[in-house]
Image (cartoon, rainbow, N blue to C red):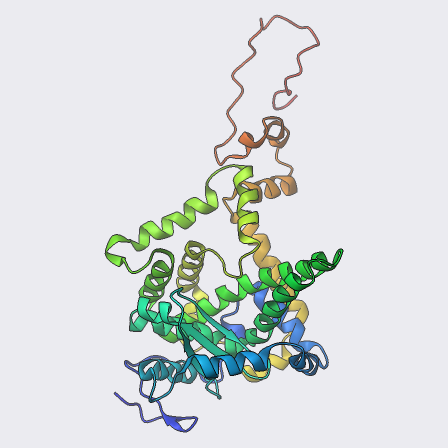
Length: 374
């Protein structure tokens, strides 16, 4: 089926009719934390010039030559079905210049968008072989979303700094300084992955395909052995389960990662797909690119802060509940602290069982906390 459109010198032929978003701003789908950082960076005078100047230091040229010489470039002659998906994704998100895309031999399912001057999309053979057409379409849309948001610049810098940290590990405090920056960039990049997942849904416009793709990345090509509801229940258990020790372990586990955990991504995407914001976008109501210059940094930061505040208040994670208790001055907080890590489970504190000594004993050496109203 052809809709007769011409885009960047080639005919756009989608496999089925999908809604297009002319002039869409990346702010439409960006996670609040991702959006606030990007808005601030875009407002910096000379920002693009500074980072492009870094291209002489970063191994971008080397990467381009490497993919050109040792990977397969997607085109009408090579991986034609991926080329159609790529053009389709760029047409739907109204990305004027179609970025080059390469398939790299690697059994590990992965995809990335890198580059300072212009983005390059790379997908591995492991990913191509794992996903069906609709699942792969969501992944291609995910990477095009990265390109539209300008994430490739920061991804490239993150890769460079991670490599640099290894090289200067012998310098006292040098590695610590760089790793502090890397840790901050990773936290931002994890949020940018949630943004790109949303872009993938806008391109694929098939939530079930997006869910299937995430499940396959987590558990391999065994869909007959997996269930979407059970998979999402894992995210619920991950967030709410355990005590304060588990909360600390979650933080330590996620710090070295550039991507959020797969079950968390699935749950976040489903939540967004069921939101009013998503429905408004599908109805054609979304921020336009030509309005980006008028975006307020302060408003973006406020929105990001409000998002985190709401997230903390509604979270079932024991550590987040503790933060809420501290902010609200919960009456049972002191008792929970005295009971140690076990006191920070999701179960409500047990009511007092009554004194084990004779109630008539009025000695002053009872160190139990006073009853409510005392």
